[in-house]
Amino acid sequence: MSFFHLKYANAQSQILNLDVRATILVDYMFRTMVLERATDYLQTKTSAVAHTVEETTANLSHLQNIIEQMSGMAASPPLGGQDGGEGVNGDDARDAMSSVTGTAESLEDLQSKVTQLEEMLKTLEYQKKALEEAREKIDGAVLEEIDVCGDDGTPLGLRSAGSSSAADILDSRLTYTLCRQTNDNKVVQLSFAVPPDDAVNLDMLLGPSRIKVTKNNSKSRGKHRRSVSERRPKGKKKGLTDITNKNKKNGNHRRSATTAQ
Image 1 (cartoon, rainbow, N blue to C red):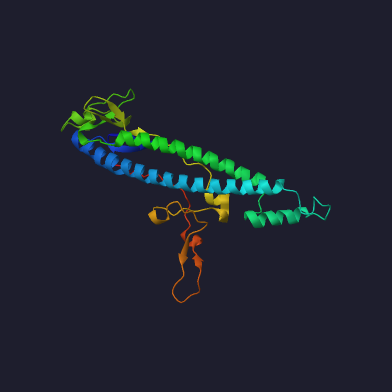
Image 2 (image 1 turned 45 degrees about the vertical axis):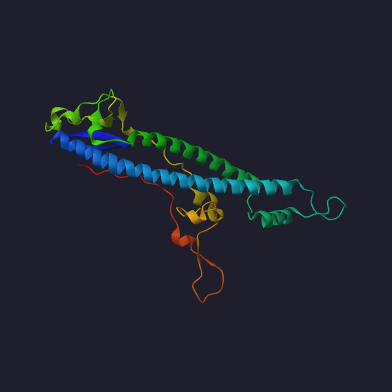
């Protein structure tokens, strides 16, 4: 069996059969790899990155506010310190600070988390830029433009080969890149690389104090909550039932899978 490797979308690769007509292969590559897989990846990943940016920004602001409060309290004189009275000891001071800020962590621990969140935002910004550039490559693509390129980036004419066998144009076992050639003869490679997700996981880093932002809910846009909750059933006392653990997600985004042809 003659086959070749095709690179496309987010650094994906698939093995395709060469023993087919060029027109059939081009049609498959366009509808499956451009319209279906690449487009779906861009839509899903763009939405996921935007949501993670919103949550990360909310948690970063929250931690920075806590650090500001703790720094202000640490700079204040201890109780009884100005008039010679008995001041509070270290444990009491930490307890008092925890009751105000809602955390028993030290300033150093909180600042470390802030630094990790800031680095995470940088990675997310790189991802956003890469996704925007990838979108420009895919948007407006039509069947008549689809082709494959060799190592030098030159289209090999698969789209104009008609009913000829793809094996007459492509060499078996070599690797090519999906591309498009526009009406103005501009060649666009339909393969791109989005930076991988940062290793920091918000749940692991922040634990129960993590602020969660409801995804795709216009009514709650801009409103951040510590946990996901649901209203009480009729007949029960007032209050909210915490269902955070029931709806827990791992936060990892998977790239769209490829299936060998």
